[in-house]
Image (cartoon, rainbow, N blue to C red; front, side, top):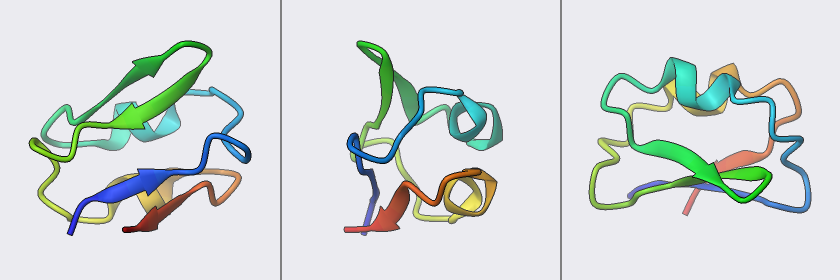
Length: 57
């Protein structure tokens, strides 16, 4: 199951995108979003998020 970024919590720092090994995270306005079709559910983004904005769907 893909991860999801809570846009109400996300601060737009990009830490998640830089930790994603499959480049499934990209900017979406001033925040970030996970492309569920690319996500391999490894959890790297979740552990790399400084504000805990990422959770499993």
